[in-house]
Amino acid sequence: MTTRRIIACILLPAVLLVLPLTTAVAQQQPPPLEPGARVRVTAPDLGISKQVATFEAVRGDTLVVLAESRMFCPLASVTRLDVYGGQKSNTLKGMGYGLLIGAGVGVLVGAVVPCRDALDFSYESDCVKIGGAAGAVVGLLVGTTVGLLNKTDRWEEVPLDQIRVSFLPRRDGFALGMSVAF
Image (cartoon, rainbow, N blue to C red; front, side, top):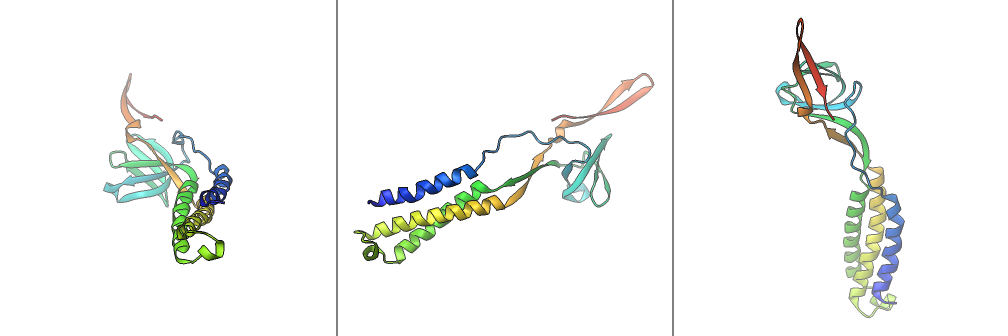
């Protein structure tokens, strides 16, 4: 059996085993900005940097959120507003790192450990190739598992130009209107 066939016999089943575990994440709209939504506010003028809070309302030109206490942030001071979009796994990143690290370690082990006589190979490079392939498989499996278990929060930016405050004419004066577009 040639070295290429051995590598194919090791890598192909591993890739076929791991592929169903990965899911394609569709591009989604940010979750709606409704009262009770989890948000992250940045307003450097107020000393606020990525403060996680609960959105309550926009009153006039002020963003009202509840963190440890109720905070009133003028919209002019808010430089970034993110809404919580759930958690995501790092499966693909784990697969990539695992594959690269595993293959690298496997190549090093294959280069250091003498295997030509033990496995009846004619060239030392066969040991390096098989070590790299075996390391890649092990790294791919370990990296995929770590990536599946390691979840991170996903935040979607709410464009600040979509939060508008305007004056509306009325018979008895003016009214203040607000709209949030998504």
